[in-house]
Amino acid sequence: MVTVNENYLLLKSSYIFSEINRRVEEFQTRNPDADIIRMGIGDVTRPLPGAVVEAFHRAVDEMAGEETFRGYGPEQGYPFLREAIAENDYASRGVDVTPDEIFISDGAKCDTGNIQEIFGLDNVVAVTDPVYPVYVESNVMAGRTGPMDESGRYEGLVYLPCTEENDFIPPLPEEKVDLIYLCYPNNPTGTALTHKQLAEWVDYARDAGSIILFDAAYEAYIQEDNIPHSIYEIEGAREVAVEFRSFSKNAGFTGTRCAFTVVPEELEVPDSEGKMHALKDLWNRRQTTKFNGVSYPVQRAAEAVYTPEGQREIRESIDYYMENAKIIRESLEKAGLRYYGGVNAPYIWIRTPEGMDSWQFFDRLLNDAEVVGTPGVGFGPSGEGYFRLTAFNSLKNTVRAMERLSELSF
Ligand SMILES: *Cc1c(COP(=O)(O)O)cnc(C)c1O
Image 1 (cartoon, protein in one colour):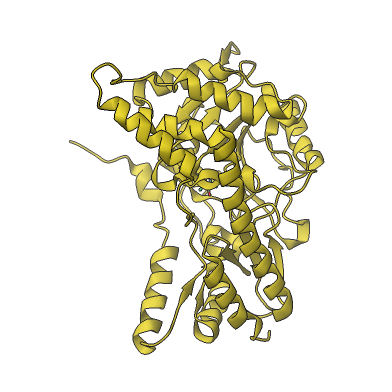
Image 2 (cartoon, rainbow, N blue to C red):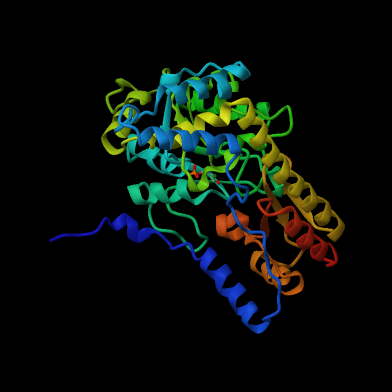
């Protein structure tokens, strides 16, 4: 008899975005003239840079010529892109990552979701709370957890609460953990870790024999000097960390799809008999079996991100979003709200006022300012009492939304 993977039945459907839509639609029905501004979107809004579009077009034309047509490419990605990444994202910062340690993919979501399958099922997994749900749910599907309890935590996972009380710096676990997902700059809190704070985690992983799965999707938003752009800026990280990057948030590739994962040569993990295995070989094996590479035009488009023109254009878009973030921060100040983030990330994490939970704050903003954001509790139990606004909107809408918000008093 055929049966389903029952691990999937443990998943609690994330009702957050459907509940947001339900409340917004209901409000719009009651107030047909309401001019609702959505500040909850976790997607970029600016178009692809011109240099990227040009390279993309040229590569499509190559696919149309008998001489220049390309079929299957290398599963790991074309050397031209892997070399451009090694040079521009790493060597230029004095970080040693070689092209063959870089694996091109169609998204950091897939890679952060897939990476767990090269690790044993009995590994103990730690995640920050609040968290990007992919890390949690991919491990639930694989069978590394029990069911979710009333508090919203899956049995068997280690949650590292990141709140105002600890300045959103994930506390080192009290129990031994094997796999640690860290995302910095962070979605949803918008906070970042300094060199020193990240170094504590690298030291922990080295002592405990754990692996850090470091999601740096928002690296391009870093403005401050003491924030590492790559975990490999930390000494010793090559032996304990995998890094995930994406062209989604820096170059607007959310609908184009291109990302990469770095698995350093030195990264080795033992089997049950203590024999060491290179993770890079296992990841390569996984990718060559289950993945057939990113399309040639998309990889050419991604390569163009590193041209001087491409760099200038992506900088312009990031500055645009970060100007929105600044406007949001200033307006929250005026409204008397406490907030975090928005300095090295496009997310602003608001502390809801005394006596108001995430959903009550959502309703207040919707009703009194016609502004929609995301209740923090949707990202994990420690997100209760917080609320996320994003800078991914037009300047005009951001200004209008914040004018309304700064008139409210809390
Ligand atoms: C947006 C985002 C990504 C990027 O995902 P892609 O699949 O590359 O679009 C990765 N991690 C986090 C935390 C994100 O918010």
